[in-house]
Image 1 (cartoon, rainbow over the protein chains, first blue to last red):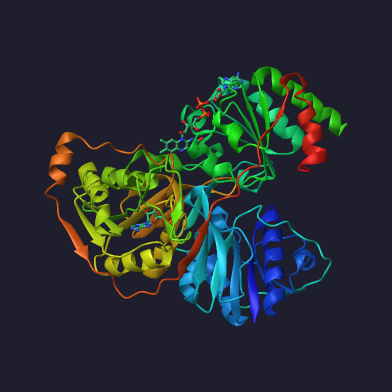
Image 2: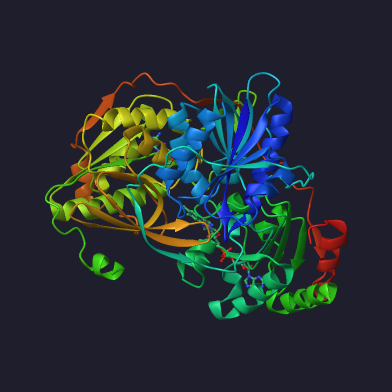
Length: 316
Length: 260
Ligand SMILES: Cc1cc2nc3c(=O)[nH]c(=O)nc-3n(C[C@H](O)[C@H](O)[C@H](O)COP(=O)(O)OP(=O)(O)OC[C@H]3O[C@@H](n4cnc5c(N)ncnc54)[C@H](O)[C@@H]3O)c2cc1C
Ligand SMILES: Nc1ncnc2c1ncn2[C@@H]1O[C@H](COP(=O)(O)O)[C@@H](O)[C@H]1O
């Protein structure tokens, strides 16, 4: 029996979400006495690294380099059959979401996306997943013999326990893609919002795009990513990829700093799972203060420089 | 090269048959609560709407089909209480509608039902929303792709056709990508694809008499069922920091909250 992990790679390194997925698989493997097999498709500089996080084996697949949902899901399903997999762990990233459904159908597996906790296996197999865009959680029973779980980034801390993995080359077939890539436009050097541990976010209270320098500076000093409220992206102050909330991206960082954002229910839906929330707003009645751990009432344009200075001083 | 494609929309398409999957969800302002010992979503007083992303999928489908003299069918898996939302889809311009009379909380079940219909209809294109804002599976698109053995492309922000050739731009982790595929395919709509259509009076009148077919569900295994729900733990209360000493926040985040 085995647990298969889809090991996502970016710039020839395993993504942090992959280390989380391997850690998750290891926790589950200990409960069910299985081995953890990671499948790494594409070039990666150190495939064996995943051993330190709990993988027993890393299957490397050289041929397919650019991501393709049909090809990747086919490879995963072949390895899963080959290794008698009972569970597949995939990150709930865009790439992960585009293959998890296809793999589930190929294996006639139960599928749960948006998973935020380790399964309850005391009676059957029950997982906790985010529903209603972060407004609630649901425990869902998965009945099929094989389960495909897409886990939300930042739900599990990667744990380096210092093990080793054998690295083997994939020997199955590689499907013919019906989709080809015309061009790719990656924002390089930036932490993807869904994976960021720290997020600094601005709302309409920031008055205009010209004032985002402060938001970016604070994010840079803290090593985080930037986000924004819906009206901010609607007005094109910021790219839509930064829009968080019920109709934007749902995020789960360790720290979310909301500046000049009122805290509307649709906004909170996407960010309320953050571990620690800081709200900065000039209106003491702003609803965000009810959802925050730390609050500062006042003018963002006076407060932000003070925080940036303190953060720089703390780093120095 | 890519721009050359985008300049010639829908060239050479004689007739398009498009299926759009519509889910019906609580209005975004809904305060979520549960009943029956936290085993059921409390629908009392809740206003239901077409899932916002599905309105984008429908609008795009109409923009493609109308100039080409094609048809757009909307399909929904759910109870009779969803019919006002289905009528709204018809008033936006859909040709006809299918409702599969079954409870839908599981993406696998929903996709199986839609696939069973699609298998007998030869649609050129199937569009869904990026995710339903209630159960958030973000799964129906890729499930359908595999069930129907066609390409599935998630989170589409731009979609153009040139004959059978499909050019889509979509979100990927940390950026965007342009893909090329051929009909038939299934795609999921993301913000930026288009602005949702608002039904006009003529559309609303016409929708009253458009065909809405109700089908009983095909036998399908559900892949999951909810045992219970829970609400996120409430915050213990906000700790206010004086604006004058805003810089103190950093020490608190470091020493107390331990997040930086
Ligand atoms: C269907 C639907 C879906 C939606 N989805 C989303 C979503 O996904 N994400 C989202 O964010 N919103 C969403 N919304 C919009 C949401 O309802 C709110 O309108 C929006 O979140 C408000 O954005 P904001 O807080 O930036 O702006 P505002 O509500 O205008 O708030 C600005 C805040 O800034 C404060 N402020 C002003 N000046 C200063 C200053 N100098 N210093 C400090 N504070 C200042 C004000 O006190 C105020 O609280 C959705 C709405 C609908 C109807
Ligand atoms: N009950 C349903 N009936 C028809 N289509 C649905 C239903 N539920 C979800 N969908 C479609 O699948 C998309 C993704 O839903 P989900 O996978 O549940 O997040 C939605 O945006 C709809 O287009």
